[in-house]
Amino acid sequence: MPAPSLAARPDSAGAGSKQAGAFRTISEVAEDLDVPQHVLRFWETRFAQVRPLKRAGGRRYYRPEDVDLVAGIRHLLHVQRYTIKGAQRVLKEHGVRFVQAVGRGEAVAAAPPLQEREAGQEVEPGDRAILRAALRDLYACRDALAVLRSPPET
Image (cartoon, rainbow, N blue to C red; front, top):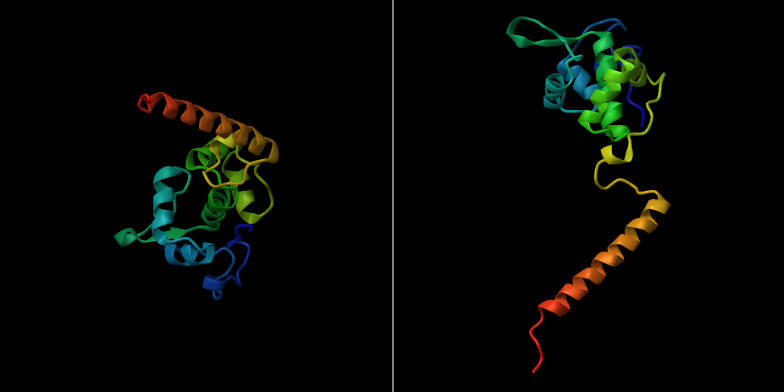
């Protein structure tokens, strides 16, 4: 599912009364992107490019470009299953504007390299056959070790 672009949608769920260019609070952004507020605050520590305005008392206000960037990061992490390090690499190699475009649905990032995919993701059929063969070899090794460890018969 593509990440919604809140900056381009003045009628979005949590911000129905705001104009397209209006600043959004962290609660509005979290609700509209379907991520908890603490996740947005965590992303601020991992992605230096995420810099919402902070007002008195530390209250965060997201500009439309901040919303697009966070939506792009969400898409990379939650939809395309990039790791944080992989998403940081996309930001470094392609830039903030590219990730903002991903957040608006105007661009698509390449699939993450196999080593960056998280556990539990689908494995390609060719890779699956190789993994099954390796697993059979491991089972054979286990059985051979069990024979060696068993006490000698008298």
